[in-house]
Image 1 (cartoon, rainbow, N blue to C red):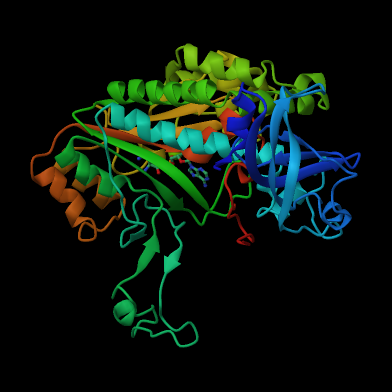
Image 2: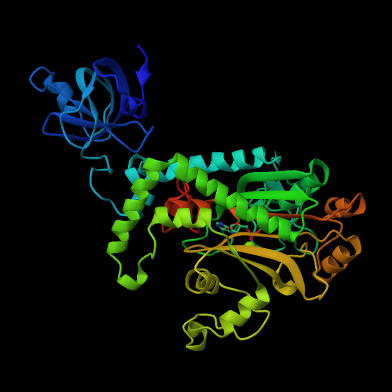
Length: 477
Ligand code: 4AD
Ligand code: MG
C-alpha cells in the first residue's frame, strides 16, 4: 500500500480507506489524539489511538518531535476543527525524540530562540509556512521568466572582478594564512593562489548577465550573492539570493514596466497557490499587531496588502520630485528623520523611502533618474549630464526591494566614466567588448529575493525568511 501525505489525506472524501502515513508528532493529548505533520501542508492530521489496546512502551515513545509510521483507517472526524481523522490500527516509532531535550514544544517560542535552533525551527507552523511560501515564490520566478521568453543563466559565484566597485566582498584564497606570500611593496602576492589572482565571492551576476543578454536577448540569473557589508539590520544578509533579469533592446521605461509586472505576477501566484500558509501568516500578523500601539499597527492585513499590491499600479516618481516632497515633509522639517534631506544629490535612506511609500503615496513607488554621483558606473547618463537612468522599486515595510538601470551602451562614455572613477579598464576588458562589438540599448534590475519573501510572508526580520541566515558574527549551521 502506498504512503499518503497529510495534504492528500485532508482532501480525501472517501472514508473508511486504509492509509499509511509517515510524519512527526506535533502534540499528543489525552493519551488518545496524536497531531501529525509531514510538511506537505501547514495542517496536521489527527490520529486517534486506542489506548487500551496499544503497547504501553510504544505509547511512552509518542513524544513531540518523534517520527511515526501510522497505519489506519481514514474516517469522518467526530471532533471539531477537522473533517477527517485516522483511526490507528498499527503504529511504528521510526525515530524517537527525547522530551527532556527536544527544544520545539507545542507552545509559542520567540523568533530569537528559534533562530538559535534554525535546524529545527522548520517544524513550527510559522517557519513551515514561510519556507513553503519561499519555495512557491522561487518557482513563480522561474515560471514568470520562462513564460516570458527569458533564459536562465547561471552566472559564476567566484569572480575576478569587483562589479559594484564597493569594498564589500568576501575574499577567496587558498594561500597559507600563516605564511602569506608578499610582493616587494608588501602587498599580497596572489600568483601562487588558486586562481593565480585575487578573487572574491560575487556581489551580483549583472556584468556577466549583460554579456549573455547581448547574445540571448532576454536572460535572468537567480542565485546567491555575497556582501561583507557590516549592516546588522532586519533587511540585510551577508548571503542572499538575487534575481537579475537583463534585456537587450529595453530602455528604462520598459524595464520599470517589467519589474512591476514581474513582482505583481509572483505575488498573485503566491496568493493563488499558498492559501493555507498565507491565511496562517495573515492571522499571525494580526495577532502580532494587536500587541503594538495603534500608531504602529499595519493599516491593512497581510492578505489585503498582497491583493492591493498585485492589483494596483505602482507610482513612478523621479528622484528630483521625490527630493522636493521629502525636503518639505513634516518629519524632515521637524527633524524626525535621522538623516535630514537638505539638498538635491542626497542619497536616500530607508527612512525616506518608507516615508514616500507608506505615508505619502501609500502604494509601491518606482523612483527613477537618480544623481549620477550616488549610483554605479555602468548606468546610462542622461542628457542633463548629472542624472542616470537608474530606478529603485520601493515597497511598504521594506524600502528598496529592487534596483536597476538602463546600461551605458556608448563605449566612449563608459570609458570616460570608468576613468573618472578609477576603475581599471584592463580588468573589465570583456565587459567593454560588449560595447565594442554590436552594442545596443539594454537594461536590467536586481531584486532581493529575501526582501520579496519578507513582504509576502509579513515577517519582520530577513533572518526569518532564509533557511540558515548569514549575518555579521553568525554563520552557524
Ligand atoms: O541595489 P543592488 O545592490 O543592485 C545590484 O546589485 C545590481 N547589480 C542589480 C542589477 O541591476 N542587476 O541590489 C539589488 C537588490 C536590492 O534592491 C535589495 O533588494 C537586495 O538586492 N539587497 C539585499 N538583500 C539582502 N541583504 C543585502 N545585504 C542586500 N543588498 C541588496
Ligand atoms: Mg540598490
